[in-house]
Length: 269
Image (tube, rainbow, N blue to C red; front, side, top):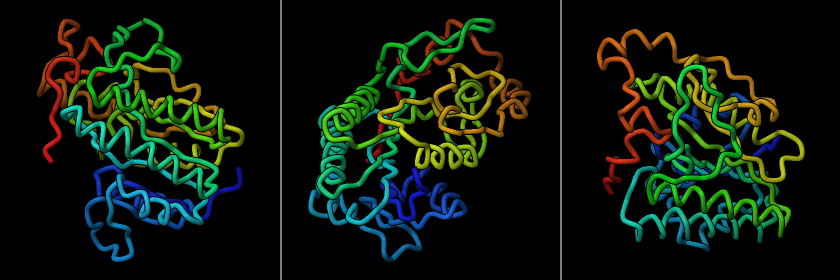
């Protein structure tokens, strides 16, 4: 599709949102910012909750696409996940439908398939159509988001690219992350491809860099025009020296979801 001129960036005050606020304008985007918390140095940002349907509808009005990063990004009690990630994502899609926004790029997560066994060296990469096996209520909410995106495409013609994000940080911080890391620059490349590719319908992709130790298949992401340029391997020596070689018996290395399968980090708010 033609490059969107204005996109709504939800979750703009979060870690990933902050990274994208600095990187996406390089691709020619004008960003409209939305978050439940004030966005630093952005007095025009919309400060509202995803349950505020009026604010959401106003925020999406007139934009060319939505990059939906908002919501709880760790495990939390189901009631909180329900309000933010399930009802909130529904509210976002409904606002986009009512205002005629043609595309959403949805921040899904590898935790939608977190109980999938991680491939060992020499085994095939995990395909994007592997059955969903969420590892937490958080992962379950991302499975819901992917199904919601499919429904809104089939029923309303609203396109979505669902990006199962690994870990997007300036550099990997654990041995597991060597397999799922997405550099911020590659994250911007992938989101740009997802915003501009033709005829995506509802497409699910994995979001990571071209890591030497990659666990999943990036074919569907590359078909959008994504060309990852980074690799976590330069960080491997230091991380393995600090933490040791991966232990196949450790859930953090035996499943795609890592320690989310048995000891998930809890949302602090």
